[in-house]
Image (tube, rainbow, N blue to C red):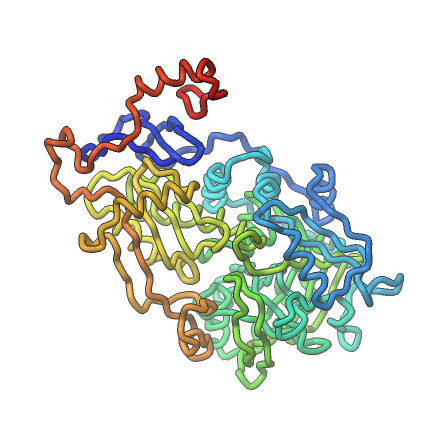
Length: 549
């Protein structure tokens, strides 16, 4: 939807509609000065546990069960990556994993690729499967600001088996060697890592990659600017040598969706999961640490994260979400496992990380929704007016942000970019921000490309560089030294704003009827309707994009 109305001086509140063009033809859109309310009814869905979610996917034809034997070493990860496609592949469950397929095997199945498809995200959110991603972003905005507190229960299926001491053996679980260049077998790829603030007691649930480094050791990759990093700093400053941690692996889809999302600091992800499912998350206390995990989780790993660098073990590299191998092999903070609890015949939840053109990971597709929703909420809280859409294309998982706005004054795009970059949500995302007018469909790259081509003038400050800010330490475009979390705590980005809006510094031009930009070549409405009225007569088939369609 690229819109080409005559670009008049700043529009006034109360305008109702204009044309929006794109590669799909013209569409007529209602305009508002504030973000729209969601227009699709939502029916929150609580699946109960991972098995309930798998059953729901199977019922909708969204699950592929693989019964042939598959090797955990390289083969499984390769199959999962090839099967996911650009958001079109099915969720996968592997029922026959080499070396883990006997009746005596503790864990025999791996499930993944469940949320790399917008249909399945819509199912999780209680929306119709064919909902447009724009609707998913709108509902995600409300979820991030709405909470339902969890409920503590005495016990649950996660306690069916309890392993401590010499019984702990991480190698009893089929952690794949996902990619040939990975530094080892990664057990933690889509588990919810639970930590808490030692002062407030508020828990955080995040996703951090974790590699098996021994029968009871898991080094993880984390950054000091993340919420887990805030907790590490607080525990360390309080004099602790270790921080309690628990990892819940395999539960309802909202666990991974929220754990990988930029939930505001001080808000517990369990509360947001409750908002998604429309019911409290039932939590049970861990066996060896003072933390709580979903009572029906498939597998729970408990322990303590070492804060002393002398306790770190080697981790990495790993095929990261950027689509590149990242996070060099180096000593990382390590979980000393003190207990493992799991359901009978547990299912290991895993994911193949890393997106490339034509192959979208779960992280990428989920990030396209939650990173867009978070940015929109940041803009709203900062008082930036006229935002009508925000989007992160899935292939790059929120590194590039697109903002669609109805301008009220000049340099409004710069205000929007500064609001985003000044927020904690920008720590590992939003390196590049492109802002377009409200006549551009940001879900159509051809439209965005057209706006950049013809509305950007670098000599008029339409391209702005914000140098040497904090940023993602996994970005291969940075010098290797700047990617060192132990040295700097975070990466270093030079951020860029591309202001592809029509420049309101330009004077209204009487040759353009008082507009600042010339008219486009699109026909007048009356001419369009007249032509479409003859479309069938002319043998051109059904008209596309006519008003009322």
